[in-house]
Image 1 (spheres, rainbow over the protein chains, first blue to last red):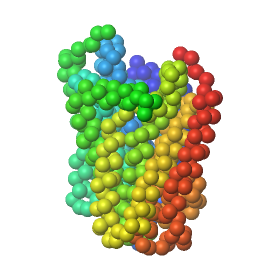
Image 2: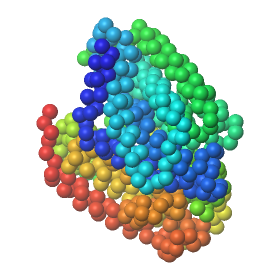
Image 3: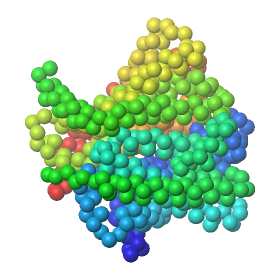
Image 4: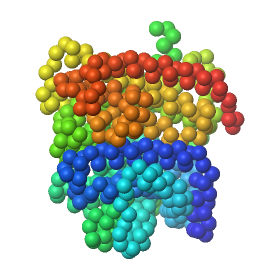
Length: 261
Length: 266
């Protein structure tokens, strides 16, 4: 059944073909900007910065632009809208746990975006820049696992933001907070290792948002020879955040008051 | 002034409406201030890590970014919700806008005021004099004039970009995030000295879209240094002209778009 839900998520997003292209073109424009800026920074310090050489930087940037849509970092307010309007009651009456239900749909969506919005920016980047391709074969399955964990962590975080609607109805505020944290601390704007020590280590392992971009990208560009601690941190955050999402959901269901009218 | 009354009312009702959700409004305002701060801190992190990037120090880069961000934030505050046109067109709510006895453009401006957009403006306005002092700018009347003209021209330019890209939805209903490349992307582009970009990409954005004039060229004149890429110093004065030209282009697009609009039905 979860497979069917996943397939539905895939099909739903597959029907917006032009929007997919538009989104990819936006990722590509930002890819150019971030990549040029970071390469200029690396050039200023002699070509390598914080363990990234030129090709690694290019792969980091283009990979993260592609990953953006796969993990759906900019959450829609759809679920919060359903909570505000009361439609969510229909979801709660289904004989499926709402968190697993939504996660299945989200994973289906992610598969579609992996095929389209992940590959298009990487192709564009490969045309103009010298990209780093993983040297160790084991990196590919590790990256795949890391990406799945990234999607799960991102989903759980976004679900928590949406759940704020059970209490405040209007979630613009939490939404802005999430945009702030997820943009800056995930490694999207710049690799977190560029920050002075000890901030790099603290942020990469100590927050769930670093698990959604920084960790998979570091594994992809083989920044160090030890991908396993990163993967372990991601797995830990996936368990913690999913647990939090389910816990909050359970409390919220008891608290839910459907507004009439 | 009498013509502005209905718009002001629309605007006031928006503000009142949003003030009902008090906790969310405050989080929104504080969050936006922080976002503005952190947006600009991205520039600082990169330039600190690099020392001197493309010949610019952190302070000089921050000046470029602050100048460009003020122009962007002003435009965002006034016409930022032009990028919601696509939602109005898709859901058919654009019909309602066009049926009311008010100008469509004015209604869109007044319809969805978002306080969070003021946060970024506040940050950039605070940071501009600080960055200027840090970079050692000696203020003269001419430099003050360039800074003000850059803000004016920059906001016109970004306003035109918001309107122009929003209008695309009239032709291309499902344009999704397409406009973001040029609005938010344009802001990010303008926040760095243009020398960091590759030549083709730089020409398209700095000259084709005029974004080099939003922050970079005026900042060069404030700093009293020549362009490492060889552009003449009087480029700094061109920002208002670039902004006006962009507005003219956006106005043409807007007219053509409204004329072409056909409801999607329900």
